[in-house]
Image 1 (cartoon, helix red, strand yellow):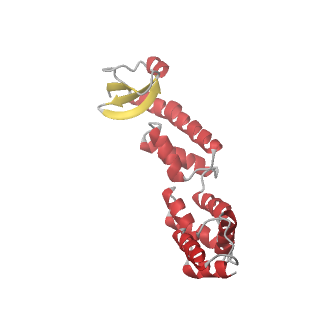
Image 2 (cartoon, rainbow, N blue to C red):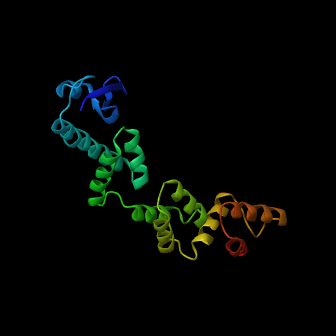
Image 3 (cartoon, rainbow, N blue to C red):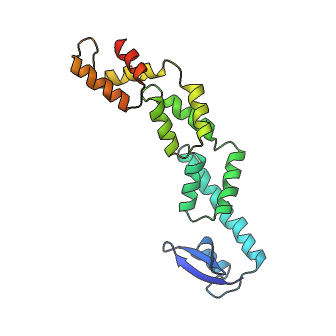
Length: 199
């Protein structure tokens, strides 16, 4: 195997191409330590050592750092690692590693997300937000079934009424119509809107 190209990512980080294919990102010091310059030969043993002891190790640390900052879905974590220049198979290994400790659990993430928003957002709005985070549909549906109770839409709408200083007892017909349209645009069903505004 031959190093065919090194491409600067930053002043200290370089993309390394082996046999014309992107292999990994290394720091300047690591290039020197492994004697990797354009045209240099790299043995299978050294190649695997770099991937295992340098790149995979770094990917694990990066993933743990990202998860320490905030909870993330598998899709979000994959995207972040991809942006960091990690090869796909290393990303797969890293995700398997963090999932083995329960650090990434899409269903649990979805449950927490629904629980923290069910009192101010419609079921449909929560569903769309979770879809954008790359969560699988079955996890979203399960979390909504478990966490979004029958009274949740009415409670959420009551909070929106309070926030927008809407009083159904003193509202004019036009104000009521306008507010009901606003709630339906937020994803609440007509029946739930009627229940909340009548209540």
